[in-house]
Length: 390
Image (tube, rainbow, N blue to C red; front, side, top):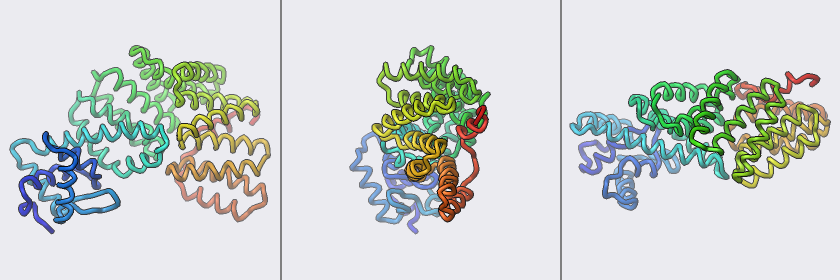
């Protein structure tokens, strides 16, 4: 193994900088943390190539690199001994990279590259945790708020709701004077994760806080998103009239501002209201309209949710052939997203459909796979079980 002392001064500085990474790093992350004031991309890529060729950096997976353990320890020791607070500079650069990466990821999760971004965020989850830990030691800086707020959707989809809520609670407590925009985003993410875990009281408090911040900023689109979330809470309380009102107002704003995310979500949840009211024709129309919006935008996560609703609608109508076809399409999307909760839900539905069709082998296989996944439940299923006359 090459030693720290055998490297040039420039190489030592680079190795010390990337020693802050946990679980490896990409070339993009390397450039962000190592870059000096006069370094361009070509220079930084050449430096990474040099370090890889010498064995100071090793390729651990396609597109990911790391330091050998021994060199990592030497680099960390050398960095801590620097009189110019080298570790603090490197940690701050690492945090800046994490914030930019998470914001790009949050935007990516709204588009056609959802799966790529989910996998990328998962691969660097330990680095994001390390960046949050560093940021929370500096109460008052908004980086922790921005970073944690940007990770809400990732934490929801990939089953990290409990951990995400813990981070969001911590950063809100440490940053009481944060900007309205940062508070609005963090409160909304906290509400999303609380709703995912069935904590309606906390979800409502977070959403009201987010709505107030968006309203004060004059952010109509932000208000529409939070109103939609409050509609979800009303739906869970079985206040269908209030839920329908909130979803309808959110849809009006979404259409006025031409925002497909708000339009699709509002249509789907208005469909859910029609569904539980047994107006299945209207429910199907709304679900299919939402599905068209999300497919057009490449939003696999929400398209899968619409497909799941259509699957359950077909099951309720006794159309097992359609239910199985739609269920298989939903299952493929859930698996691709790495959404264990959603995968388990559709597997259970497919097991019921296969059993009704007399396909005992398939029913057994679906149920066995479902049992292998962590049981979390699915809030719409729970809501329907509580529905009068269901």
